Length: 227
Length: 263
Image 1 (cartoon, rainbow over the protein chains, first blue to last red):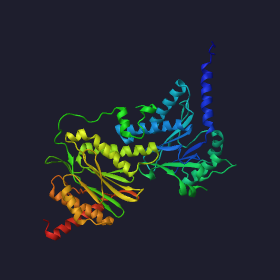
Image 2: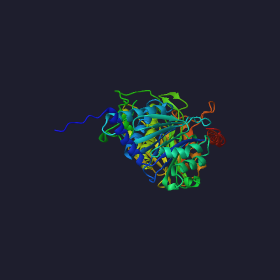
Image 3: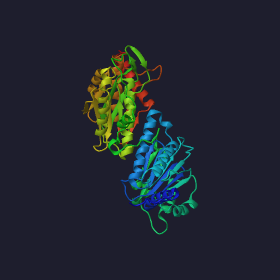
Image 4: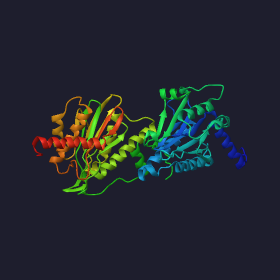
């Protein structure tokens, strides 16, 4: 009979984190940033059916990188949570902060208690209901349940340091949609290669779209917006 | 509230009603007939060259008593469809709320919206589930209308209390004033009406129904309350503005005065 080896808790957590990080690093990155009229989310995604960015509620969007089936499971749980909450209370009572906390709880729980941590990083983004003061909020949640919040931008996925280096010097609040998009695409692609509309998945949260502020930017509209 | 998680065999999929069932929100249930609850009445839907017009009066009654003068019976259910309700007001409004949410929930979970046919069937299922309540006097009988983006045409569906779904070729009416409304539409209906004429015809139908049926509310000039009218066409659902509705009804009132002194 073989003796089980002793593994220190530090080592075990580190192994799990390494495992999750490796999975996430294999995928393409994603940038979310606030611009003049709302929040823009840009992902490198060659598929136009398996989405990384999607709608959760009236003013809340979801984005995920890493293993598709895992973040999609989280996305659906989020939609269900939001719709149930809006149905039993009121539409105004559904907010991103609560949802982000729920996600963090769930990811943290899975990270410490289950066989395999989730190989995902997710983003919950929200704008306010006021047109002249959009109060963007972004919650970036890691595989172990760590939550980072911000109001300007968030970068998820592999190679985030490199992308951030290219992105943050150019970022200014209140950019136009096309400027915000150009900056994000440039940061995602780097200098050596170019990204075209087919390689991108783009969506925005903006009150100009009505009650459901989430809207995908696709096809000719996206091609026209790209520099 | 925590994040809902399901094992694959228990997963409710994109069905919001199933999700609520799994989550254990109770349905209305009681024994015996429930009387004197507010009931909503007359609604009509008419096809025209660009789509469908939906209209409904604003009155809810409990027996001979007017319970509400301002309730709305024409609702947007999603970007390209709408529901007009008659029957027990409380359950009807609740059904619409659930139906709207069902369509939105499906769209978000699945990533694309249901076909118009699928939406019509969904509403049929909800009415069928309401059958026990209907037996206690809480019947809900809506009209569902929408613009079918696959067929490029407006379509109208009517229901009975068991959830039976019937597609109408030209127009539909529901509620206690529906007999009179139907007659008016029959007399004025033509294939390929334009929007203005279709809206006027719908307004006429509600007007005459309100003139003959005490449970149907007509234009209320004292309170500035008018029936609501909406159109659904290729670019989506659109409520007709209050001003336009007022103009339409003012014309009807004036023409009645001219014709026969108002009788």
